[in-house]
Length: 244
Image 1 (cartoon, rainbow, N blue to C red):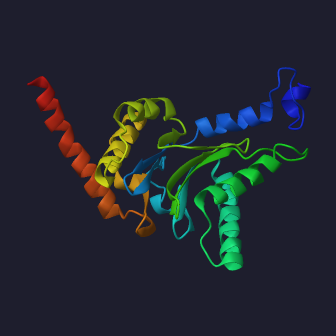
Image 2 (cartoon, helix red, strand yellow):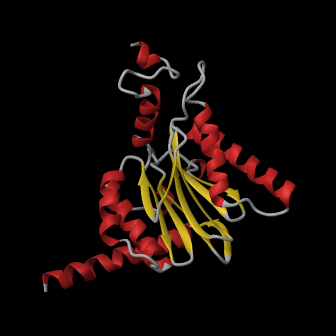
């Protein structure tokens, strides 16, 4: 039990149980997908609207950090909000000091340094959230995944949250380098639809996009509805072709 309770105490086999429990909180979070395409990155998130009485606009899963950097979260929403606020502060400090936007990898490392501090000192707990940070800078397009331990990994396409096993299986089979924005959007929606096992609705998902020649933005309800409709149109065509 001593190893289980103390964040600063390693178990005899070299594990920090509180960090592993924080990862379990991420696994129970909403399905969050990130995919790189030819000239940008797309984030697709299930908002998990639990009741028709909930205002969908009050549930925020995708956040702007800088003009060309955004992120999506899975896990404890309040923890994600604190990390996003810290990331925004770091981005603004860099811009004031150096007169330029912060690099995506540098920002991600600063966020992870902040998280790692909470795995070393008593009286605190790790952040029970993971982020997919997407952005563009002078070095190109980037997609990073953060971990409650403070680790980070760069991906071409990845997923965090409840539907990770299902989504990763689809991404590994169907993801292609240099794919178009339209193909990346379709793949993200297809993977999310498979993971949540229900028909997608524009008000129950969030989509964020950043391109090398455009700032980070969220898609409107109209754009999301059009993308979902196009996905539904393609399904019967593929089924018919397969049966023929």
